Amino acid sequence: MMIALGFLASASVRVANELGAGNARGAKFATLVVTLTSMSLGCVLWVLFIVFRKQMAYIFTNDEQVREAVINLSILLAFSVRLNSVQPVLSGVAIGAGWQSKVAYVNITCYYVIGIPLGLVLGYVLERGVKGIWIGMLCGTGAQTMVLAFMTYRTDWNKQQAWWRLKMSEKVGAMKEMLDSTGLGVAREKASIMEGEVAGGQCIHCLKVISWAND
Figure (cartoon, rainbow, N blue to C red):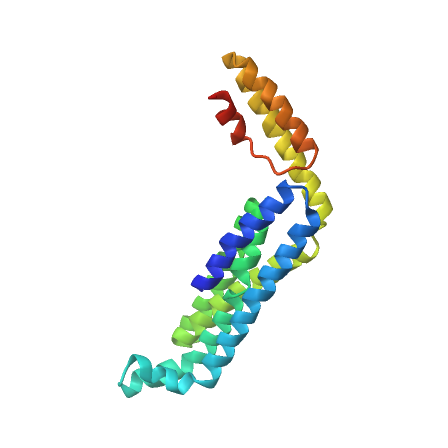
């Protein structure tokens, strides 16, 4: 899971940088590479947990009841690792693409509308215990993964790059107005240069204007 969270951070940064640089193809390629890499690692761990599920129990305890519980839950653990090798990466891609609000809605819906209620029903109403709760949460994670995968698959990266350029131009305009109000004429001129760089598709951050203003 921690490996996948690392991929989440790297995916969000790389996709955002590529889109900010006007490189839609690079953003798509970065998405493909990081997703396949994390999926490959997840597949390896998935196989290891399934094949060595009985031996794995001996690592943690000598108690036979605990061993049996670990063996019974190891299949669910394997599928949990499998799903969680993809879902965080897709979340990182979505964050890098500027879909933070959409990701929040997907997370809330999948966990609080699907995962938790289903887990409570399976675990307590149908008396499946821990296994039922875990199955419910896995269903929520699976639904989240499918929604994010569909969003990513349907993305027109050229349009997404154009949207990013528009947002950057709006931020530069707001920064220029703020500089005008403070009387920083030189910084405003440099902001105009920056605006031209944004229009040219270069990866420029609005915070550069602040550093220029302090020169």
